[in-house]
Picture 1 (cartoon, rainbow, N blue to C red):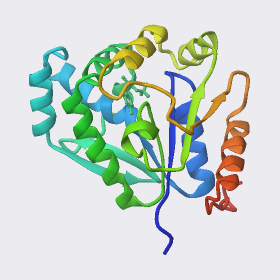
Picture 2 (cartoon, helix red, strand yellow; picture 1 turned 120 degrees about the horizontal axis):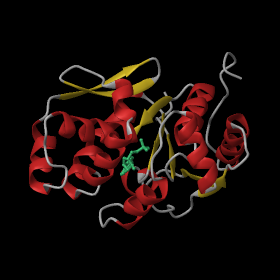
Picture 3 (tube, rainbow, N blue to C red; picture 1 turned 45 degrees about the horizontal axis):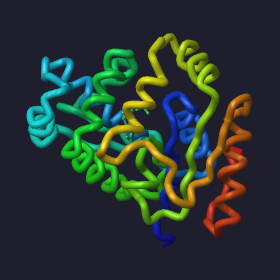
Amino acid sequence: MKPPIVIAVDGTSASGKSTTSKHLAKLLGFVYVDTGAMYRTLGWYCLKHQIDVNAERTVANTCRRWNTTLECADGQVHLLVDGVNPGRELRTSEVSTATSRIAANAKVREWMKRRQRECLQFGSLVMEGRDIGTNVFPETDFKYFLDAHLEERARRRAAEGVHENLAARDQQDSQRAAAPLMIALGAKVINNSGMTIPATCDIIIADLRQKGAAVELRPAAS
Ligand code: C5P
């Protein structure tokens, strides 16, 4: 059996990472991992249990003790907490803001990195986030960084019914000391403003092949 490979997709908020990664995973028959959802689950959990997201030690302790499991269903990994997937509740602007705070916590990031690397048990991965190519799987040869103009990104989020200050979140993500958002060495940068999701996937697949990745399109998905 071929060893599993990891495609790391990082980028700014609302740059199309999720939709692109999901589509790409389906095309290639890989498992999709949304690491933002894992961080959001902790942000949501803190809000739900009235844990101060700025209290570093308390949040780190919470993360050490909460009752979680990784589940792979329909080609996607979910982090369950007390057996529950919070789903849409993770997508509010309150959860986004809380999440950016807990994501700056170095102990939280260590915990998340361990869980994210455990996802390899499910097979080859398309993993999206902010630090996948720089920190979680720095050894992978397949790194992509997505971006789009701020106005377009704000439009995309508004279309999902969420109004938030994306520039502020990007700034917080880029300026934190622990694994900040940045372009990994060797990553291919794709500005997908005005580009369709299949077109972005085509660029990634062409690059994967050029780099010698043994990827094949699944007949049902192409
Ligand atoms: O991608 P998404 O917008 O769902 O991520 C929510 C937040 O989680 C980001 O703004 C960032 O603070 C944090 N995050 C992170 N590292 C990742 C994924 C997400 O710091 N790998």
